[in-house]
Image (tube, rainbow, N blue to C red):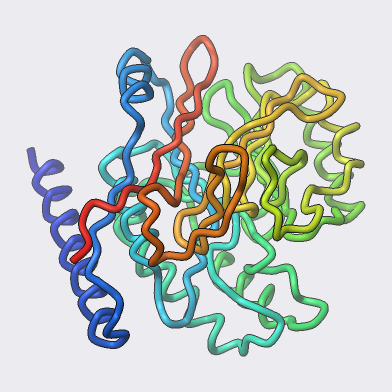
Length: 328
């Protein structure tokens, strides 16, 4: 009873903050309307989910792009829905903050503070959070070391109730939940460092045959889904990784492309899942074409995030999709 009251209180606070941010945006921008956003499952997915007996539920969020200015209402709504789902863990698939080659350390630190402010309610519920660096989080270190330094500074302090099997939060790492292994591969760039590939090979060799499922999480995808966003270059990872994972991975989950869907990795039986976007600019696949959908456009479905449900018989991935409920 106390837990339910606490959750209701938290949800109320989130809603108040959500309204306040939108009102502030309206006053500053004038032309931007007040909006209310929710994330929902399709009716068919609701029925399928209700029939399952989950052992674990993990929310997969990607590309929130929180900046030094703050978080988008889309990400706030995604966090609120995550709290309603009450998962066993939350995985962030990169681009948690928004940056470029010219960001100052103070700006990056503020972006991370804003990000943490949004996920505070998740952390307070003692739901384990597992981060993975994206290109906006840590990829531009050659031009701007502030990005990766800020990422390391932020996540080095983080402590989780679930111990790691290998690695560390500021690089590649792995953790387990019962008979399932989760590998978080540091992939903010297309080219994967040799030491990262060697680390992945060692982990897979050491744990071979020990788990029912071995899930790989990357920021950039191993394989591209179709239709492919026309304004992106070839954004899949160095294909040297395919040889390593070919017969030892159950599925791959990725962010970066701001779209959701799935495909099979060429030359393997492994499914590649794109999780979608929960805050940044939205690239939505509609019909046979992919298009950019800016936040204030009139499309009713934009962002998406994943719910990974693990059962005794296998796993299922559901996509919660963003709905614009009100605009006035």
